[in-house]
Structure formats: structure tokens, C-alpha cells
Length: 106
Image 1: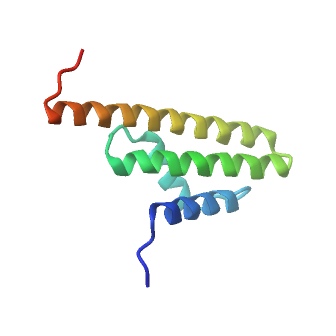
Image 2: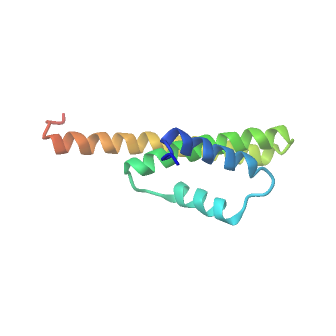
């Protein structure tokens, strides 16, 4: 048994989201909701923002291929929002690192 890498986790989330086209189970919907409404800025949150953002884009493409353009638009917008949250979280983590290192910010 090997320990899953972050890339493995990302592929798992993407595959699970893509398979949810048309019928998302309650557990996946809750996980997506938890990540989407998260306001923290830890390394785990950053990676979840990226993984679920990519998953939303995969789900949007699957919906688009099935002709469900309304859901495709929704999941694409959610994916974009999660990627924006990832950028914000990265900035916050960088600021925390600068402060902890004792560097002067201008």
C-alpha cells in the first residue's frame, strides 16, 4: 500500500466530480459545499481549492457534453471562484510566511 500523493488526490476528486454529472451524491455535494464556503487559508485549503476547482471544470465539461449547458455554466463559474480562492489563499500564506520570517513589508 502506498500513500497517495497530492496528484493522486486531485485525480480522485476530478474523477469523482466528473462522474457526478446528472446525479451528485450527498457526500460529494457536502464536500464541495465545505470547500466552497471555506474561508481559511491553510496549505490543505489551498490544495482543496485547486482540486475541487479542477473537478468543477471537469464536471462542467461533462455536463456540456450531455447538453446540460445551464449546469455546465454553474459548475464552470464555481470552478473559477474556487481558483480565485486558491490565489487569495496563496497570497495569504505568502504574507504569513513573510511575517514569520521577519521580513519588512512595504
